[in-house]
Length: 449
View 1 (cartoon, one colour):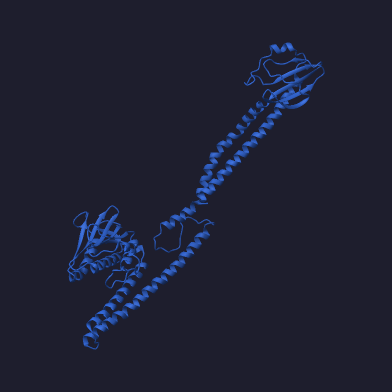
View 2: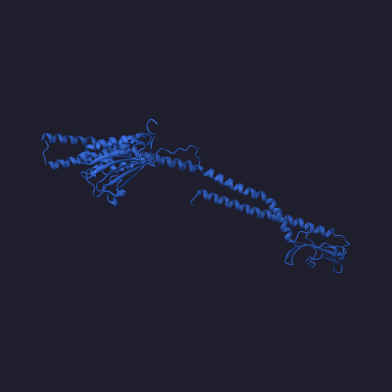
């Protein structure tokens, strides 16, 4: 069984059709029985009521019967005298032998006959009638009885379709309620319409599962945030103490050793910061979104990274495509802090992996699906076999360099999903380097409009 609706409709309609067939056969059988009783009575009445002065001469004047038509009542009357001589028989009718007294059923002339015979004072009268006359009358009676049923069947099928649709409507409400929820939403399911008793256990079980998931998710986010916070403070203090000890000479050692230690500390501090950012992003909801000037946000981020880009002689800039006017601020519906985190992670990755003297571009573009944001570099790119995994948490490619934690693109992907946008990572076609695009940011009305 793949569909409750099909199963219900199939069996209900099949049951209705079977019931109609049984009812039709029953009505026809009943009508045939009543017609037989009526015609038996007619045969007996005709046989008894025939005048006594009918002779063979009358047969020539008797109206000929069209046996297969509708003339007269399709009765065949035969009369024998005391000596057994046939004294009356209608012309053009089949000759039936003398059967006997009472009712009989015989097969003659390719037809089945109902025959009634009666012995009178000076003669024997036999009246016969073909069975198809009775069947025709029974069929007519049955059809007259069944036509209301024929009208009722389509109405009943329509009612069944309506009732099944209404009966299964709560399942559709539940499906739509789940489809319309945000990916990170773990609140209990609440339907606008009253929940039927049969579906209530399912909804209750689903809500209980969502509550358990929400508790587990909250515990995980709390643990990650607390761990990141507890790690960041002592690590930062340790780095400051090491730098102070180096300056006052109380910490002796080679420059390379101290540089490696400081590099390890910087990497751990960066990891703690990324974990804290990931935990904060997991805890955010779409309710914090509001109109944001993406152009202004990109200008601020590019300005913040300009000094880092200058140390590597990297050309860092912002490009605007498909702008509605020179002052177009590319306003979108989003979380300004989350978008800044996304852009900072992408710029940090791009500048770290772009060789000295290279170029990094931040691009804004208006598209039919919304506004697109891209960070393009001319670094080494990513091997094709690793493209699909670069957005996984803590994943670092085989040739990755620097103090990255493997969370930058994972955070960016999480932010894009929360904004109902699509983050794509791929090597640039026709050029060297990597392109990270975020398509589908929802446009917001311009300020003052």
